[in-house]
Length: 204
Image (cartoon, rainbow, N blue to C red; front, side, top):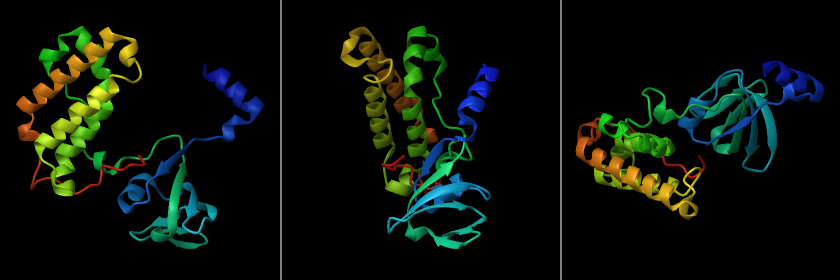
């Protein structure tokens, strides 16, 4: 498979193509997603588009060989890279679904729970940063968690109303997960021990 990919790349010139990942123009996201030596495609607030090489980072600017660019003057950043930028709220601790053993015993549950990973990540962020950053309560984190899980039931492999049995099983799994979180989650919710991080962004 690798040989075939390399062969196609040499024929069509695809080896020079790398994916771009958009980085929200906020200091904490830039710090998490940009490193010295990166090539960035940026759009300035006046509409000018530029390709730059990063030689250094500051709280207020990106340093380049042609001079510093103020973050306040950047409208959009795209990083050319094979890997997505790190999320600043998830850099130090693992995120994802911690499924209780009692639920893992069910094969039907495991089939559905695979779809809940994005909701679990957001829920982890909410427990760690929600109270300090947005003033939300644990109940609000859990309510949003349930809503996000149920929303995935109509997406990929959920099929929504096209497959009523799958749709029903997905909703049951979401409710089971929510019930366990309400029962066992309180020790993990951080109030004064949480840290500030704006994990709710419309553009990520």
